[in-house]
Image (cartoon, rainbow, N blue to C red; front, side, top):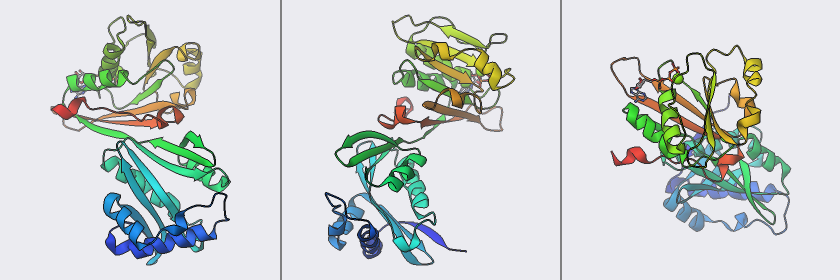
Length: 308
Ligand SMILES: Nc1ncnc2c1ncn2[C@@H]1O[C@H](COP(=O)(O)OP(=O)(O)OP(=O)(O)O)[C@@H](O)[C@H]1O
Ligand SMILES: [Mg+2]
């Protein structure tokens, strides 16, 4: 078995990173205009690593992959993403990108972005498969981006509503949110916050008999369609609700939608609410995962709890 390690780069790794970048980029066919990667040297890479960090992958001790970070506000740019051609197709790039996304989440960064050349179909396909979307194109350069998941600890029900309310400000007609989590986790509580933020009519409750309820906007904005899929038998029944008819004009929230509602919306927020085993503890965790091109350019931001 091969031994693959992804290492948070320090000054000690600069020479190996330069080596990988040169091997990777000199093996590529020459593009017009050519990449500037071959001008990288120990000085430029050393400065990049010192300022923003980077990753080095070693396979059985030998340098096999590398990338450089560049942090710019709420974006983490991946630069010089390189795999030594002798180590291609061994999961080096995937491992490296997975770690880069973890670094972004740890640093509290909303989006990861990179540039891929339009002439390289394998590269383009790689980023697409990893959930990246083109957000801009400049000549031969495709700008790929992906919004990062957000994880928050939510001490009280009011905090949960405040998160929903803040998120509502980032939503527009056509958006879909798929909520999952145990009974009583706080999915409806979160939706109440959304309803307050969207300024919609009617109390948002856990519907006992109603599977789907439309809350029209009181402020000229999109309606909130609140679906509880708990009692639905399966996708056919969800399909029967004919949500497609309202999907484009409303913000649609599907509780218990996991495994059902995804096909409604390639662009969505997957939201998971979890509670601990201790019933006396009100603390919840919420994880918000943006999926699809809709979110790639903006990401998701929640800052209400930071003041506490
Ligand atoms: N930190 C918290 N976040 C959310 N709800 C909390 C929190 N602490 C306590 N609660 C309480 O937990 C309950 C959550 O109920 P809610 O109806 O929102 O859950 P749900 O996930 O929609 O459940 P169901 O699966 O039955 O629809 C509410 O009574 C709420 O006041
Ligand atoms: Mg509920």
